[in-house]
Structure formats: C-alpha cells, structure tokens
Length: 415
Image 1 (cartoon, rainbow, N blue to C red):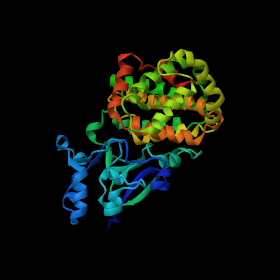
Image 2: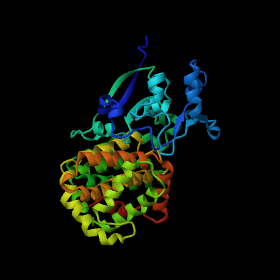
Image 3: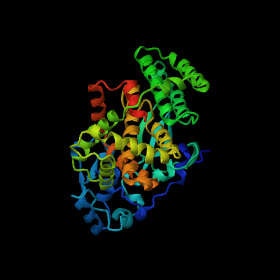
Image 4: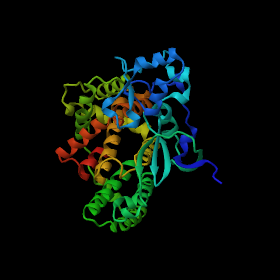
C-alpha cells in the first residue's frame, strides 16, 4: 500500500529554512515580473467574493504571447518602483493575507525553492536571491551534506528542470555520466586540503578534457579521467602546477566593469545591488570614467587588508555557494549545450561575486563581514542569476573575445 509520500533529495539546510516575512531586509515581491500559472488564474477569475475578485482583475492580466506556457499563462505587472502592486506596506502579500497561501501562484508559493526532476525523483534546493536562504545555506562552516527525506505527495513542487540519465536511448550520451560527474565535482569542491581557487582550476582542467571527450565521442574515457584526477588530487600532484599560475588583477577589474556597468545603467530596480556596486567602485577608488589600471593598488590593498582576512576564515561561504550552484543547476548538463560553457558560467558567477566583494571590503574596511556578503550575494542572485538573457550575453561575449580558455579562467579565479 502506498504511503502517499515522495522521496526528496535535498541539501540539509533546506529543512531549516522558513520565510521570515516582513522581518526580511528585502522582498521577493520587487524587481521582476510575477507570472501566474493557468490554474491559479482560473481560481482568480472564479473567486466567489466579488470584491476580492475585482481587486485581482485590476492587476492580473493574460499573457497572450505565452499561451502555451502554463506557468506564464498570466502576469502581474509591477509598479513603476518595481514592486508588485499586491505588496502591502508591511512587506506582506495581499493575496496571502486575504485569500490564503493556497491561492498564491506556483511561483510565489514555492519561491525560493527550486525543484528539479532527476530520473523521476524530485531534488530540492534554494535560490540565493533570498537573504534568509543565504544565511541557512552558506554560513554553516561544515561541509554541505544531502539528505533523502519523505514529503507528502500532495506538496506542490514547481519543476524547473528535468534530467534523465537511465533511458536506453541515452546509452551513448554524456548525460549517462551525470551522477559520476556530479559526485566528482562536489567532492573536489569540498576537498579542503586545497584552497578554493585551486579546486576550481582543477575542475576547469578536468572539464576541458571531458568537453573534448564528448566532442570526439570518447565517452568511455570519462570514468578513466575521473579516477585519474582523483588519484592525482590525493597525491597532491597539482600543487606545483597551480602555484605557477600568475595573477592579474587588472584583467579581473576590467572584466567586472565591462560586465556589470552596462547592467547597472539600464534602470535596475534593486537598490541593494546598486549600493553594492557603488561601494565596489568607491572601495577601489574607481570612478565610472576612470582608467581601471589606476585602481590596481587600491584593489590589491582591499584584497590583502580586508577581504582575505575575512574570507580566509570563511572560505566555506563560497564553497557552499558553488556546491549549491552545482546541485541546483544540474551541473554540468543543464544550461548550455557545451559542458565547458557551463563551467565558464560557474566561474563567471564566482569571479563577479568575489571581485565585487573585494571592492566592498575596501569600502567598509574593518567593518566588512557577514552583512555585506549576504547583501551582495542576495542582490547579485536577484539581478544577475535570474536574468537568463543577460547571462547568455555574457557567454557570447566570452566566446566572441576568445576568453573561454583555462589560462583566462585561471586569471579570473586566482588572486
């Protein structure tokens, strides 16, 4: 007899998360389009209370261009300030308060939870565009661990991505190696015998090879390569090669200004992210029209005097961020078609966060700490990670300028 329970794979931190509502320093009801799924839209149209139904009709409209997309069947247009018109002064939702949680749209009911379907089973994690999610997921100093839990089968899960690794038709597809690659990637990221930058470069060298195996249809080499790299990591054979990699702060700074400045000039609604970016600029003494090379000394000082003393003791924050990124995004397969492109995008996320935090450390000096890290990662998640169009443009920029190489990735990673 069925117990009406589903088995869910998730990081342990997910069970400890609860929305803190009006106590949150930001709101998830500002800064983006709110989409309404078809079933929820029909509920609103047929709601028995005429007064409440009339209130909904004022703000909820059909999205005719998305008629085939169930979760984008309708939308709530934000106000001029970017806020949802149903967001009340105490930062709580009008629908939640008046109609109950069960009448929220699929997106609003599940955020910040991200659910994927892997081989018919649900995996759940949290997106880092929520401040409380960041505190639960990233700040625990121990290695991020995963649990299988039982969840009521009636629980609503909005599926983001689907991965199938077991079908016979995938026998000659790289997705067949998904679990091997995922376990290897997380194992390397959590190997604290190496600095985080070293782990990332090792993964880059590994995925450059895997990418070529896929292109050359040599999938049988994947398992051999995993075993080879695990042995070399265990024996410390990468140490000398990694230490010889040069640093180049000027290129790092040019990258961050090239990628982020156009984004900030297009009317971003997140004042939190704009605050972080302005602190970055001030922290390295870099006015918008200044030559980046003139700010090299301050950037270097910010890193050595304020960023590294904090992050050296808290490297688990970025480690956990990357492990969550790998798990949540079904790395290295969900996203771009080329495996190495997904590695490039992971490094772009890491490098942009790191460089912005370095500048912010220079601005806050001895006061730099947890509060600034939460603010930057959360607002970065909201403004950058959720903007798929912008991320596609970043990848195109890297390809157009021949920057998708390990030497360039290493420059972005290593300080």
